[in-house]
Image (cartoon, rainbow, N blue to C red):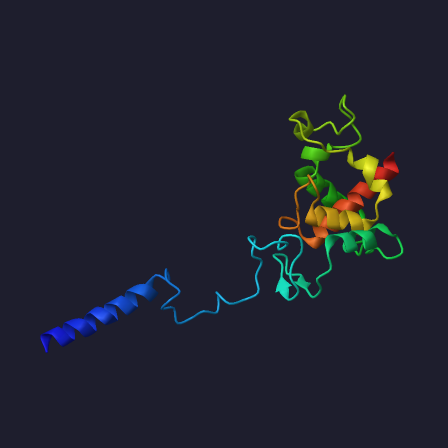
Length: 183
C-alpha cells in the first residue's frame, strides 16, 4: 500500500511540475497561445508583409496580403494616394513641429541646411549615415506616401509607426508642407 501511494504521489508531482511553470508543452492543458496566427521570423518571407487576419501594434487590422511594392505604387500616384485627413491648422503644424524635432531632426536636420557632402546637416550624417534633406524630397511625394514612409520606414530609415500615432504622423506631414511653403 505504501509503494502504491508513493507511486501515485510521484506521478501527480511529475504532472504538476511539468505544467506549473509552463516550460513544457507536452503536459500543457491550454494551447491557445501556441496555435494562433503570428509572424514567425524564421519562416522565409514572413517579415516582408503581415499575414491577413492579424492586428498590428497600432491596432490596424490587416485584411489583405498586399505587399509593400503594390502599396508604394498606389501611394505614389496623386489620384489614388491617401489624402491627409488632418487639416493644416496652426495647432496641427505646431504639434508636427514638435514631433519633427523629436523624431526627424536627428537624421534629416532642422530645415534645408546641408553638409559639405550635400546631405542633411545632422548628427546622424556626421557619424556616416545617409539621410537627405527632407525638403529636397518631400515636394515630389504625396501625403499618403510620406505617411507610409514615416510609419513603415525604408531601406535605412527606421519605422516610426510603433512610437507615433496616426494623427502625429499627419501633423508631421502638415509641418513639412508648411516648411515647403516657406522656401
